[in-house]
Image 1 (cartoon, rainbow, N blue to C red):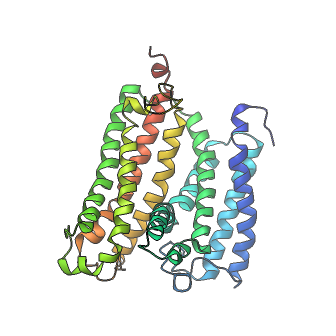
Image 2 (spheres, rainbow, N blue to C red):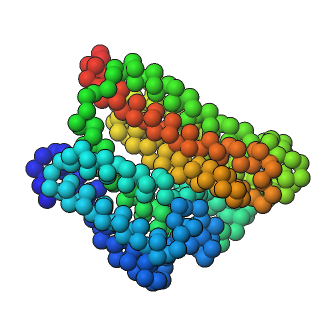
Image 3 (tube, one colour):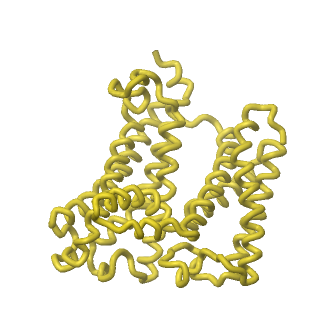
Length: 337
């Protein structure tokens, strides 16, 4: 593997991830296609799944994973030999988006968001520790693995596509785009939080009194997830505010120092993926007439409408992160006094 250039050194980790994933899932895909054990996409057997592969037979799903592994492996080989041309770079981005965004469902967001909330609830005696174990199943871990492989593919492809394009716009233009995207990325979790905190306080926001009584036991969990969403919304504002470029005064040891541009941008991009995946799953379920939310939620607007906005939230968060990164790395911004 050629590692002489700085650009090639940055490809080592994603290439290794893709190689390991390709070899592993090539073997697993063949195993599952021929009826082997451990197939993680059968919703009827592994739980309430909502991925694109859940409705398909294991033979078909396993075959699709084999094809994905072959494509990913070919991209990894090309990337190891040198910079990707435009065509394989586009293939890498598209294949990565399928694995990391389109294929998964809400379980990744549940694991990342609900796990700390459920742990706190269990420690406070408000939930059972056994509920936590239900999130750490093989189907859920499998989705995390797929997302890691997809992100690695997108990194390889996007890096080459950006390198081959002109530097977009000006810092002022990137800031303007960032403001619009940030406004959306902040508004959606606030709407979600208004409903969930209202329920916690006994106010049936968007739902009936009877439905609120039926879900009273789980309202603290929704409020906990809303708290994380509101915290994320506050941090999102840093993508367009000065305190998002330099550490605030209240941060020990780092106060006043520049924040590395990649840190906020990559954090926001990482959060945007499971948010978008979860929202797309809810939209698919709603369009196909499947149940969204707790039993009896079909006629309760507040129980499912906020989730329909999550793809917009995730997309806006990704755009805000990319605009922030473009603005921070623009030569004109770097020359500011």
